[in-house]
Picture (tube, rainbow, N blue to C red):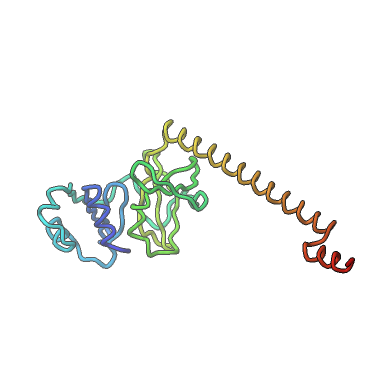
Length: 216
């Protein structure tokens, strides 16, 4: 995990939540994503600010909270009952509302995850996301590297009437562009076929000259 990327997203949200666990591994997050600090010393408020170069001026802009445990409604174990592998919805992503959003297919439909929330694990090419249901009925995602959990991330709440309308408009414009491209390709194909037919009937320009020379 890229710890500086994690610190960066915490600074961006002006939030730094440090959670203790019974197994001695602390988790660090910004309210939208939470990551285990494997192979790190045990931090307190002052030590974590010092360790990552967060000066007093930056500290004034950050809400820091130290919890005795991770959120009770979130399961941070490596496996959870009823979890489903979440797959990306195609190879696309969108930039909306100042956020880079990646769509994933879930049991509840499409959900978007902020690319920033996944940044701490950007160097893990084998990571997979699993959809889990919290005790309060909400959906969250467990990030796994192999069989071990490496993070928790929450979906972004961006889908509303305005968002859907804009996506629908974009879809219509894409359909129009595809239609026009198809018409243009068909026109070019028909033109090429006509040229080939004329060549077959009358020969190329060079053939025609040879025939004329022969007549002389």
